[in-house]
Image (cartoon, rainbow, N blue to C red; front, side, top):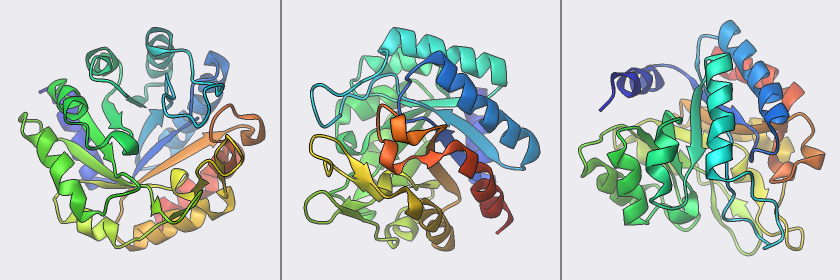
Length: 265
């Protein structure tokens, strides 16, 4: 288990933490634009900042949807951002074979919500020794997350985070039960609020996912009131033309006021 992972995990446990970035890697230029702003916030704010973007969106609604540059090229781009801006990196993995390669760049491996019960994926992520952030499935309660957590810890890796991202509420809709946050805090791990995916309207735009980004600040503030100390916020300079999850991503120029309010409050 790496000293670097231990140090980062200790920081996450003790400080307000932000996971920020565009949903999917569209281009290296986009990553630099967003990373530059995240780096600025890191320099100005007493908080932990982690840069996030996906090399492959394997769970898009339609087969024609943009997925990203793929594992090899995507990790090269994330490594460039990591080196240039001195940011911690996280990205999601969908298959066990991706864990080792992604772990060579990422400080945190993220398990997508739909896959949080996939034992082989959880074990592969855990065995890298990196921090594992497990997103709570839309069909599970906070209490149910004990079992994915135990799978990761069975490897001897105790550096786990759990993320709330809402529950299914009929078709094409999610609702957040904020009681899930204190339920997961009871397990003794950092709990993250996914402020952007929780305002999604899954598949709600006829083959695409819709969303209500205007509710993102409210999700963050409510989650803080319930005890969350980490916030996942996807952001983009122009979400209206983003290639994935645009309707629920926050405009990049709206990010700084929200971050600073969350740190102060």
